[in-house]
Length: 370
Image (cartoon, rainbow, N blue to C red):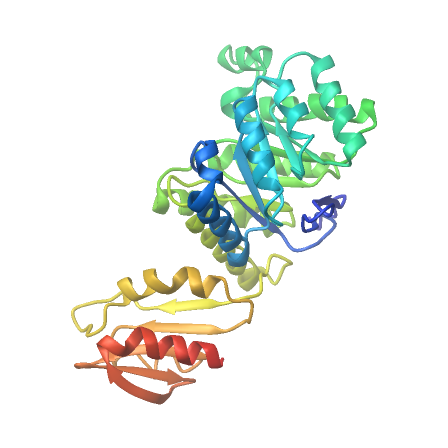
């Protein structure tokens, strides 16, 4: 399939950066804020740290950042935060349509609603009306765990399988949006099952031109979650299905963004499709009994800095002379252990030999010169 969805722009008003997605454009990476916000999180030094973390996520490749907004107080907090950052923020609303209406008073770039629990059609239409007047897109978020009651019962009674119920819920809500004439819509159908996620998105990709937000929900801790998302997303992206992704992990936002970048890079490498992202490629050895340099610790210290680089470079972090300069000759810059010393190398050529205590400073200096 060579799917060409509609193009939707998230942001692009006031000070908010415009993020276009769909229409064959590069896939947009998303993540979601992990903690409930309080006013203390946006005030004083804590507020500066919150803004700094959002900016760092943007630098690392996050195109859209979502916040759970469970009540009107959090709507005020996220709205305040949206006025202080350029990264498009999304309000995730369940149960109470009035929260969505309030969020639209702020420079919040997109609203995500789950029609299965947002209430009456007239409430959905109130959100659609205000979003249309503000020029804000909406995401229909259908989850296997929060289907409309009638579809949930049908699954339990064996009338529908979970994939069919996801598709039915999505089509039902799209019909409401289409009847209202609201076209700035993105659709997601998520399940914790890899098979259900793939099948539901394949079906809807064939039935609609609406941009698709894809990912496996509640995918688990870091390793399990990355594996499940990789399997599902590679299958879909390789077929041209998916315009924006979120790697749901029981882990940090930063690791969700990194996982998203690596999945997109792997898809591009294996298929040559549009998923490719510019920026750094990190090559690092797994470490073994030969190591004389702690690659794990060094990589953890530097990975957020490296993933914030825009320049397309390859960085090698190697543990010993066996897998150092020779095995990473392609690297633009590399560092490896050699007995009691550490070697810096460029394209396989050693450029500096230093003590381990000097490694970070020397690496930073060399990185600056790239």
